[in-house]
Amino acid sequence: MDLCSAVQFLENKTILVSGATGFLAKVFVEKVLRIQPNIKRLYLLMRAADVNSAHQRLHKEVLGKELFSVLRGILGSNIDSFFHEKVIPVPGDISCENLGIQDITLRAEIWKNTNIVINCAATTNFDERYDVALAINTMGALNVLNFAKLCPAVKMLLHVSTAYVCGEGTGHIMEEPFCMGESLNGTYKLDIDGEKKLVDEKMKELLVEGRKEGIALAMKELGMKRAKFYGWPNTYVFTKAMGEMLIGHFKDNLPIVIIRPTMVTSTFNKPFPGWIEGFRTIDSVMASYGKGKLKCFLASPELVLDVIPADMVANAMIVSMVAHPCQSCDRIIYHIGSSLRNPLKFSSVRDFTIRYFTKNPWINKNGKLVKTSKVTVLSSMPNFLSYMRIRFLLPLKGLYWLDAIFCQYFKRVYMDLDRKVKVAMRLVELYKPYLLFKGIFDDKNSEKLRVAATEMGLNVDEFGFDPKCIDWEDYFINIHLPGLVRYVMKQ
Image (cartoon, rainbow, N blue to C red; front, top):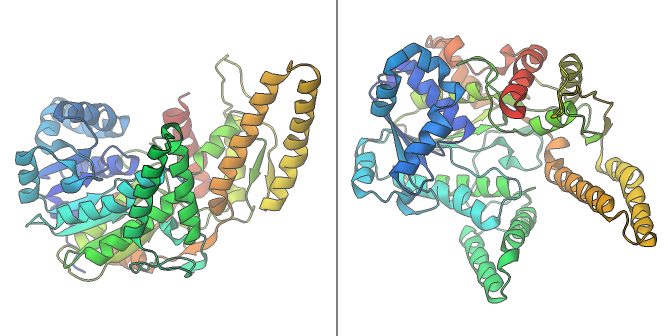
């Protein structure tokens, strides 16, 4: 493992980044531009109808974000010319051959110049339409691999996956690759081509039956059904696992690094603490509590939540790039998380959230302070279902009969409560594998990478990704929750 200076390594390099408008990709792009202004070029692949649309997305959804404020402060009036020279938006789509890049000249230029390919593109909806998730998370990964193999100067492909491709694993979960066709339950051999055909046949069936309006729901149900058939809890992690399989099987001699982060949260340190975009896995729960909407929750108090700040994931990506170029070995997999070295219990997150919103209450749209109330935490699914039955389902049934007696006088109230209960039950069903997750992510490979980086003198403050340095109380109360309120809840 030859670790030269990360800054030196990035000098004069050309990097292609897919999924460039995503949260993690933005943190990575900002980091590269800030630490190495002599990067040759960043090609940022994004969905757009044409070059003009891609430029608009680039400036509105990437470079225009507050995340880049530190870089703007450094470069001052030179920022626009710097972005123009270094950052090239590329309209495309990873679900298509050649990444959907229609401009032949631009495509040839990217092939010729690219040294490193980073695949951050993904649809992260747990219950995404199966046709969409399969096209992006599975076949998209293969399309990125095939594109990278056409770049004569390419040194490696770095693929961002998720640690939860393990499904509902327990105990120590190792940094191990999937074999082609492997299923988690071991019952049936997974045939990815067969899954594609199944989707095509289902789509034809729906169209023949004239069920265009029901296509989205049918495809969502199909994805969840196929995922559970092979042992995965949802469509997202199932299709991400299949993407890993294809990359490993068809990689040939191209060096591959697979980064498997756990639950990615706001920045810990650089470019500044607390930047976040969109609700991450646990944020919707904390925001709901702060707004006074959370009444009950499914989770074991002793549950270890594996979270990792986004800038630490970006640091790990860069250090792994420096460590593994041109090494045509098997896939190197890195778990980037905290559950092994600095475990965080759900009970602690609950306490941090209560303390924060007690001291900093949310102000609702009417300008009134929201007073939070005690949340009932249920440690098992049977307990949760019993609570829901007594607290909501029985009153709902009573309201149904009352509405019938009074000639639908309570119809609106009934329908509103019925909708809320169904949404709550659906969310719990989706998140249950993570709310009751009992696995610990082993990170031997990541620790070796950290040790090598330290021994080679890489700046820990700039490139560190050791979760042991995080004081969770300080991070949640002084960094993450204020960032969540400022950038996502928009107070």
